[in-house]
Image 1: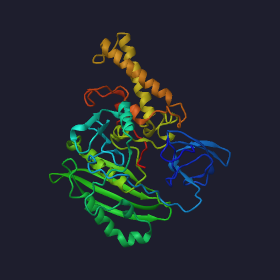
Image 2: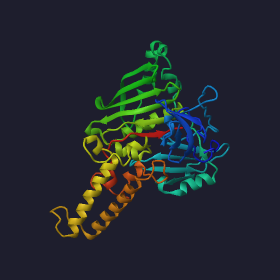
Image 3: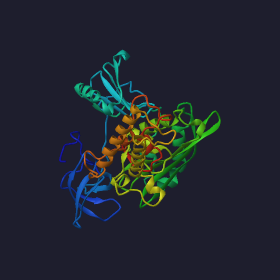
Image 4: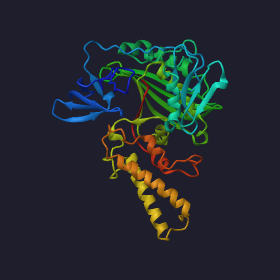
Length: 423
């Protein structure tokens, strides 16, 4: 707190401005006001409310009192390298320097990194696998003095900014509905996404004084003239001017699953989001197998309610879909499996070798350790992340279909609201 922009992590509120200790804030959508007393790297802000309570809140739920009318921050690339790799989730460069670097999700959802010491010489590229677990990539990027910067635009000429397409008033909707829909069609149709195409059913703008402007995008996924899936994205402009998008739905027909559409489609959209200065992507609960996919793609809990230990088994299927409840269920099942094997009474098909017993025990120990950490405050640095849960029991070469690990079983089909911060 109190750090200068660009230094150590510091939270930003709905307006995108830095939140500092002592700031007066309001809980968005409620009349509750208070004073900021602390923050953590988990993107939680401690607030002492005027009514006497003290809680931690996700910063995007806070409005910071402004001394003057808010103006959205402008981010200008410090350099315009010509060779940004397609599909990069984040790009790093340095003005006047030949080196650059980037990170990108691979086919299994792991975040890999690359450093190119000379943009003009492809032979100088080095790859770092699973940069979340390999400090060498960040160390080497820092040693080169590289820092994150907006990538050069990969847009075709005439690409629209989403900031210009999401309506800012009712008049905007009435006057530009056809223009807005045409812009979405121009940008998204007549492209290939890993061999698939999209046909837009609607790109419908709307506006309300309470919720601001939205554009609802519904599209069919097609391949070889046949429908292969359906997708929905909703773009938002809040009354205070904040821009964000919710990934509401993506479902591929069984015969087309696992062929790379989701990765290519989301990668193209995310580059457009960043170019258009959108603040965040939100995902809703209940997205088929998305609970695992989103966890592996860098999404975090929207707030403590989404994974907190109070969402434990009880009545109602929705509670049982929460990650913590599913984690507890997997732990109980594994404890029972190990117990019957130790007692020599395992049913047919459930017997484990000594090596398998050792592996399952290690998986159980890891799961218990993460479950214990859910009792920490949500803003604690060691509060578990969705990705940590998803990786319980994973090891190189393990096949997710033939040999699903504990974390995969927990997160695949789980129901939680997540967010990825883009700014």
